[in-house]
Image (cartoon, rainbow over all chains, first blue to last red; front, side, top):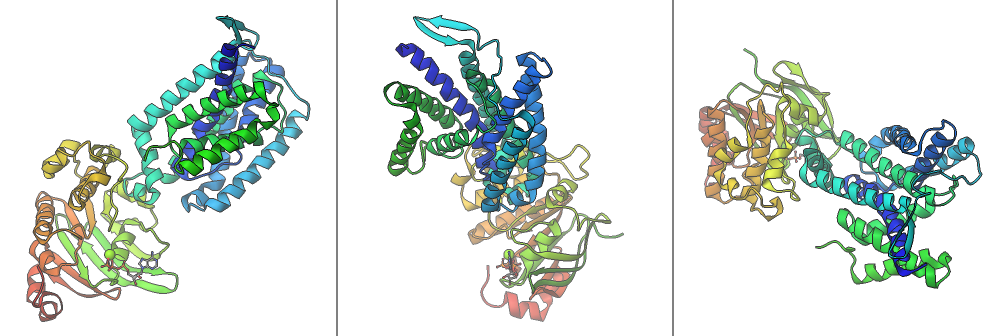
Length: 284
Length: 242
Ligand SMILES: Nc1ncnc2c1ncn2[C@@H]1O[C@H](COP(=O)(O)OP(=O)(O)OP(=O)(O)O)[C@@H](O)[C@H]1O
Ligand SMILES: [Mg+2]
């Protein structure tokens, strides 16, 4: 592989991380909710897409919205179960509850989808492109473009719309938000569903790049956590930059060292950054 | 005619301690009613319970009626929608947002019965906010922040505006300025329930005054009556004061 191929490969990988991080960032800053089931929502996004294409024979582009709706519905149920804890900002219980959800979803998915590795058939994955000697797939382009679009939308909605102002208000002070007439519980629900749908979307578009198992997700959630913390909590654009950067780092690292070490290397990077700059990349 | 806001037999406790005990209070249409009392008398607990709001976990019993409707089981965000709007003690605006964003965030329902204040109406009431429209609230002075808090409460189309010590931390000259602002709103038809430590200042602008002592109403009457009341004079108006 030449350098440009590496670059595109790294960017696609990083865009996948960024897609996972966008929902998490919004959720964490708005609801102080660390969702350890985030990775399983990613896994479900991938598997429902696979299921819809193989069992119902739906085209890939139709299967994705099906997966997003399914995960959104699931997210509504999960958040309704957690509303009380979220309103009380019972952070530690929330971590454990989401961890429990993660294991439940993984077990449930194993029962429904089986334990074999599966491959999502995406027309974009079969599309070989080349640019200046670099070779990559249409899927890579889809992931990168999608990440950019989603970040732009999230940035606009949070910064410029009334829904965004509500989310920021609840993030700053959920009690005070009530006096502005804002139903904090509903804002939490919207944010949680948004974050789940982003994870599912990431799963649906990233998964065709390699075989999927129902056990995937935990590695992804750890990496997402890393991206969010490195970016600085609540720093949307930082999430995109760090996600992309981490993807590039992993791709480049993988060409010189065994890829098994790349996660460890990423955490070394995290340690260095946090020691030097405890607030992450976020401006003070 | 019954009062616009009626509080009857209200009791509020935190755990086993009683902070507000059997309070009856009302605010009539177009009236400015003040609540005064010592630190810890239960003033904030009382008005927070009227708004259905708290940063703690109080237990509330009794009745809070807005235009005859009992709202005591209705959550705070919906009471705001009904026009029972509170500006709490202390932090009352989102510091991370600009003045303009704070004001825009509040949108009354289409069928909200209270009087509507547009963004421009708020700037009309507090002209000095207009120049700070795009400033983050964290960069405002205490008084300016209080204006934003009152401004966003006006945006919610209040029928009864509840203000918990809006003048706290302000210079004596500014205290009267803020209170006179509030008086003008009342003269315009708004009904206000105001918590004010400074009894002398409260009596300048209020129509009626309730005195709260250890969670109970220890006296109430028209501003004129209360000014002449010997106990009030001795306890609150003697010697010092603004
Ligand atoms: N969140 C809370 N949890 C437990 N007790 C509380 C809480 N808030 C107030 N109290 C208690 O209730 C009583 C009344 O407090 P409150 O804040 O209503 O008084 P206040 O009249 O508003 O005083 P101040 O003039 O200082 O604002 C006090 O004894 C206080 O300790
Ligand atoms: Mg108080």
